[in-house]
Image 1 (cartoon, rainbow, N blue to C red):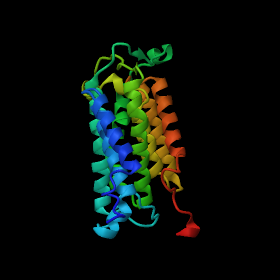
Image 2 (image 1 turned 45 degrees about the vertical axis):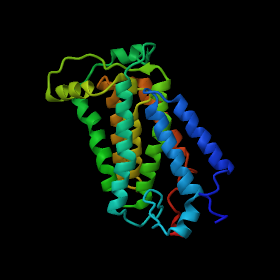
Image 3 (image 1 turned 60 degrees about the vertical axis):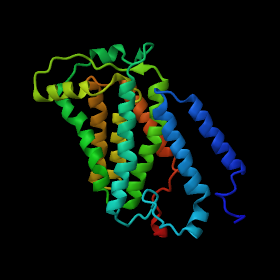
Image 4 (image 1 turned 90 degrees about the vertical axis):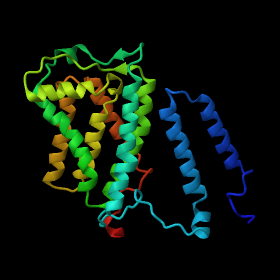
Length: 277
């Protein structure tokens, strides 16, 4: 049993992990648990699945089930893989976002609105475009027909969460919804959405990031569908301003974040080249 990594608790990796968890325990507070707990859980998962995985596979013979890492371009995702994206990507995002909403707006917050934003009228019918993001993102894991596309959707969303949620807490930038008088059903829907949201989650715009991620995987194939999804994502970005939910700065920063995570292709394997299929 001398080679058993679980028994070798004096190894440097375990000592570092122990110190990390102890530090997180001392630093944690009710306002920071949403950040420290996922960090600790991620560190433990990386330790077990990365460092201990070879030993566990040899000794315990666990089934190899990695639903979010497949890069088989021509293989259709399984039902369990789709469910895992909902459970380990979309649900954690919802919990983290609601945590930001509960934290509220810090007292020293600065608005991202400019004089241009204040001159743009609130156009109530554009709420239909703005709200379509929720439906599209929710349906995307079920619509994708290739495992590599599902993996790209999941990994880009996870990286975006790592980048954006700390920004929500650390950057005192907000965009309070601009006032308007509801005169149509979509206007009342907009008011309902505002009552459930918070200006603390405005910069950068996760609405824009989600639209870009969904459009990139749903429109990955060449042809008219690609341009259709690009047009939809562009309209969503515009609607963020015309609904009075975001400033232009929020939208631009959301696009910048998406471009950043899309370029980090060393974090996930890109689509295999046709010659290698």
